[in-house]
Image (cartoon, rainbow, N blue to C red; front, side, top):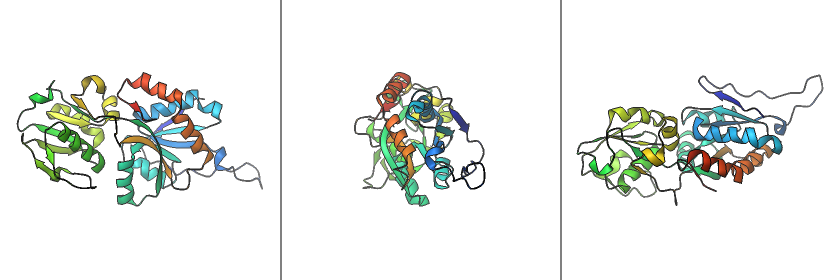
Length: 272
């Protein structure tokens, strides 16, 4: 089956209900419609295209992949019905989005982990980071917190105890190197590498920027016990949609596990 992928550079139109031709015929059921799934280009859309090209036809799944280049619009489109599901986010990010925007979504089972990494154009050893160094981190609350924790795990800062709340730059309690931390939209962080000493970059955006996390990162997040697995998200109540269940079975299959391991060589790690 040829994958139909749409790069969302303009506003996504709401999906119209499909009706049968001719007077008096019943509307097609949801099971007869393509499953529209919004995804970040790498690796999420690539994984979905692998499923569409190799597994979906035999499972009877008609899959349509819609690409998004940011972390906000996929949830907007899922909420307004333009999408049936999305595949780009972690549970902590989803919880923050639900709290701030009032979404009523359900996260399905973990699919993969993309470790955040610390990268530099000027350094080959994090120990050589100078005093007063500039640091770029993602600006959304979830990934900013992950980035700060990664800096702390590598003894660059100490964070105040925030309990269950995600730490922010304001929670930096000890900063022995007087690091200058700036927050940048996550997709733009790789472009900041030329202007900062180090940058904390999401795995998918690192790959899109032709970085190889396993080789180019000075350090990476630990995968074991990492709560930031990426997964499919649907509107609450749609979990039992036959098409969603088909996708869930395929996306956590042995074939997809092998595809992830072979394609991303440690930059993306199966979580099942």
